Amino acid sequence: MEKVSHRQERFEACEALMRIDLDAIAANWTSVKRFTADCEVASVVKADAYGLGLAKVSKRLFAAGCRTFFVALGIEGLALRESLGSEVAIYVLNGFDRTVCDDFVAAALRPVLNDSEEVSLYAQMPSMQAVGAALMVDTGMNRLGVSLSEALSMGPLPRGCELVLSHLIEPERIERASNARQKERFAQLDDHFTGFKASLSSSGGVGLGRDFVRDLVRIGIGLYGVRGRGFPGAVHQSVQVEAPVLSLRSLARGDTVGYQSTYRADGPMRVATLGVGYADGVSRNASSGIGGEPRGFAAFRGVRLPIVGRVSMDSTVVDVTRLDANEIRRGERVELLGPTIDLAEAAELCGEVPHSLLTRYGYSRIRRVYTSGADHGQA
Ligand SMILES: *Cc1c(COP(=O)(O)O)cnc(C)c1O
Image (tube, rainbow, N blue to C red; front, side, top):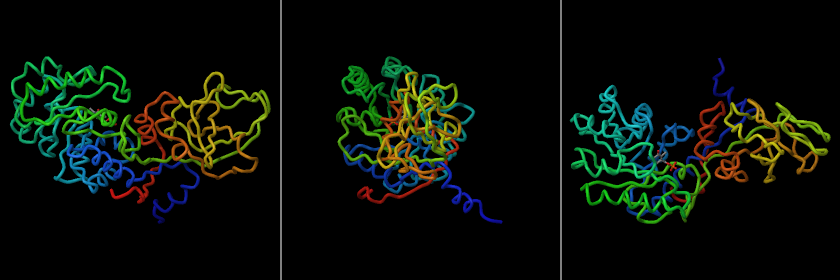
């Protein structure tokens, strides 16, 4: 019988694809490494490496030199340990529970301790202490972590817990006072604990200054192609999404497009129906707004094409009036993310963040294809 993979390749021309450039991801890691010099650059590969594929992405990052990884779940940690072997440190952001202690120990997963109960549990378990852990201290997020006052009233860090974390609320807004406030709160721990490594910043915080970088940075979205504010190094796009044109049609004034007739043509126009929808990861929030204003775009040969009407499960309609007649044909491939449609910009326009846009594509029906760009400098 014919191998499924061959048949799959034949079908690719008719489907939406997500192209992932692993060399770009590696080059982005190297770029942060160069900028932060002696600081450790840890890769955040939770949620299947933001939807791009945990095994492929983490192996490429390992080859680039990364030795510390963060995942969210223990089960993600197990998968990562299996693909990378014993040489890397793996931290589990959502922590652990009594029921999974043995699994954490067996796979040498280090939990991030997120509240005082979890700290006590860890302190009772010598086998876990031999593996290690990190302590999350809440400096304002009110999500996870022991409070600053709890941390300041703790004795020494539990054995094996040599990394102390906090997380910034809005690093992408340099001007916000919250950044300096969180940094100062975090710095109070320097006089309290001894012999630990400190980590305050995710991708967004790296460009805020040396005192935000500390000993270890946790880079997620920056690896996948989004530039943090103030970060001067190179950042390469790692993801492109494309879809085929299924059909083209002309509309007259008054014609409507799609479910619930939310878009009405106010004059003659031409539209193309693309074979990509919300089941492939397009955000339904990218549907056009009440007055027809665009909240999402596709692009063809560098020309931006506004999404019109509601995004459907398997298709999305775009306005191609700006293209010359016959310039675009059935079967042609159109960009949803890539050189013309920037990830961060696309996310903002439809009320998402780059992280949610990527995981939306990554956890959908869309097929991932891996490429190696190779022209991103020495990675
Ligand atoms: C997800 C996460 C990160 C990575 O954030 P990016 O914005 O993707 O760089 C870092 N630290 C913690 C605690 C996180 O939850």
